[in-house]
Image (cartoon, rainbow, N blue to C red; front, side, top):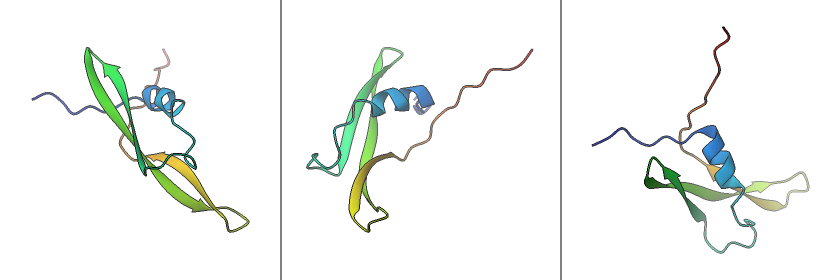
Length: 75
């Protein structure tokens, strides 16, 4: 068995652009498949309700997994 899949920050950001409008989506979860080294992996997002400043509920998508952050080393 290989190492667990941990998406990059870019992969999560790219996938987030494909999310539907949370208020219009009937389910509390949304899965976006992404390609990773000839294998398709699923990124799972969960819809959460937050209270805004007017005390109204508004919904947002949340990714709750780990991510990898690529940094460049200065030479």
